[in-house]
Image 1 (spheres, rainbow, N blue to C red):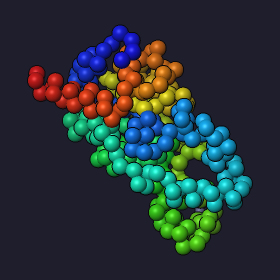
Image 2: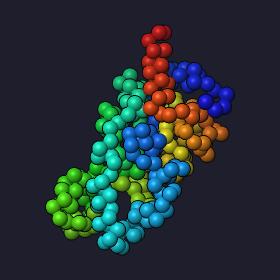
Image 3: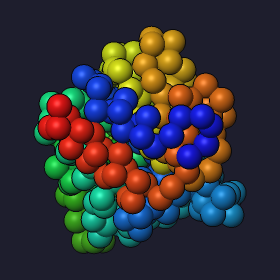
Image 4: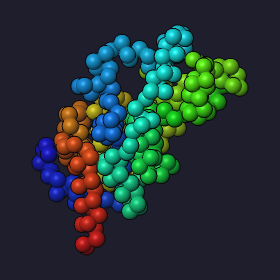
Length: 260
Ligand SMILES: [Zn+2]
């Protein structure tokens, strides 16, 4: 723990909260074997050239980038990853009827795989498991497109209009979806506790949601191994492995409530 509030305080806040909004980032999935792209050991931190693959401009301009991107989608660790205790802890909150929403920066679908209601998961950076046509906006499943890649198409075009297709994730240089952002801002403003888990809070506008919550009167609890720019406005900062500490914080809140 960092700062004046202790783990008991966080448990008490969570126990008393009627609505909790979680904001999750790469850190909650690293324990499932999915690498963090921006952290100290991140893929992009160690190899800035890899980041170029994820700019919309180079994707549209360069067929070689698209071919490599389709192979990366096929080989993405999310296909084999399993949800961990951190994901499951948030399912527990939902089953108590106290989870307002999970806003996630992750594209790996692990919250839904853990059992979270897809309707309560707001994927601000999109999802790996769907594909958008950049021309007509048509949406299809990732698996059916990867089947076409496996069958020999190295850059499968839209079957409706022939346009370039891309994973339904937000690339660098690509705007976030306004409707999704609006949902995220509403969920951040409408909670008693914003639980920011495994996010470095360095990427806008996701990071600004922490401030939205605090301004709306919520307590901000940051669970992250590394310092974040929002630690100074947080009511508590927890620097322990998520899969260990999150079940403890949330499960205890269940026990506390049942004792009352
Ligand atoms: Zn199309």
